[in-house]
Length: 383
View 1 (spheres, rainbow, N blue to C red):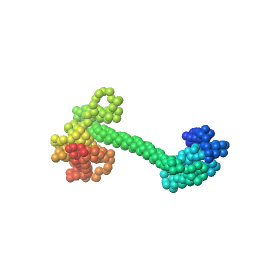
View 2 (tube, rainbow, N blue to C red; view 1 turned 30 degrees about the vertical axis):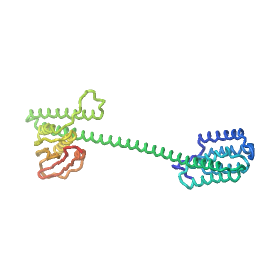
View 3 (cartoon, rainbow, N blue to C red; view 1 turned 120 degrees about the vertical axis):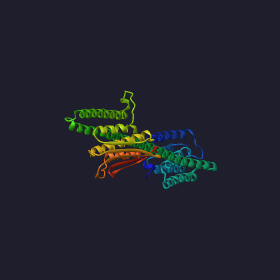
View 4 (cartoon, rainbow, N blue to C red; view 1 turned 180 degrees about the vertical axis):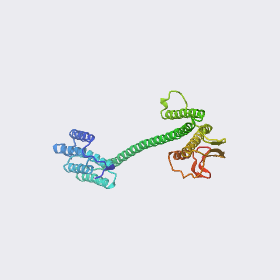
């Protein structure tokens, strides 16, 4: 026996205990107080036993719905055959029929329940000692419809509530999953920021420290200058780290400082730091129209491309070209040299591609004529 939603009780519910007890007591009192009169038998012990048995059968109405409706229908027929009035013994029959229609969705089970109720009505018509009038038959028909339609409505209401609860749970899970995805994306973004900013600073510092160490004895002034650049870069790296930490925890920053993202105007400082480390840099920038996020992407991509050039080569000019044609901004960073291999995808290349993608642009990186190039095309307006 399969009930709606796969749910089936294994013992009577607390509400059914109250219902069966109250109905048994109320039916017994109503039978004793309301005399049936001829041609029916007066309420006696066997009649009260039939009424009590029909009422107590409702204890199991949610555990064995079909057997209960069959039992109370049979007791109604026995009640009529014994000559008792149908006044109160019919109540459990209608409640049991309502229960079947409120628990079963499939029509075979509903049909069995309806046939049991129909047989009870037929037994009433056949065995009742009084005259069954059309008015009584219309009342029986109305009770039958109320029980079946009301049970179906209760089933639909429970199904709707269960579906609404399932939707609410699903939406809550989707919100949690979305929040987790956003958190992971933000962590990845901040990891990329740290990689690009601090990686560039450390690479330039290492390069300057190496140059300063080699020439310190012969050219102490240049060595001191290199140390100064290293100190400046170190402070800049610490400021960048502090900025990112304030992004992670704004409440921890009580200084009132505002976070300033790098722009294309900062490319000159970037080129100057690299030149100070002893590497030739050619910077050609024109007027470009980019939103703040696009300008930040251009700076970070340039920074990462220059960092890779410093990491993988020790000589050769680095050329940076930034131009705008119509609604497109073109950035090209070329590390001049020979025999560059195809790039191996790493965090730096992945970060650059992701920055370009988020701005609605494209990035290409690989060997070109005369060196290794990074080419980025960004739209003026972010999609």
